[in-house]
Length: 78
Image 1 (cartoon, rainbow, N blue to C red):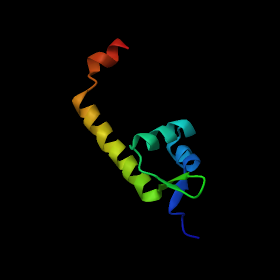
Image 2 (image 1 turned 90 degrees about the horizontal axis):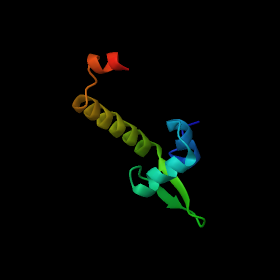
Image 3 (image 1 turned 60 degrees about the vertical axis):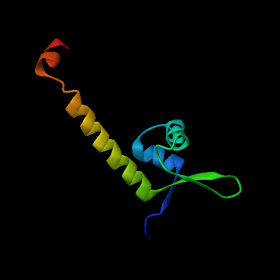
């Protein structure tokens, strides 16, 4: 069986190892694209959008680490 195209927020939370409320905050802020479907307005995140989000996080983290290097002197102080 093929993987589902859309994920529930609880599925996204499990994949990212974060809480459901953190996932909802990512969606509401627009940081993680999602759609509301159905009469009750259930949130769904497209699997491809989640993979794009994860890739962006890797890129942003790499940029942060390169501009905020942790030198050996700082390691020795801890």
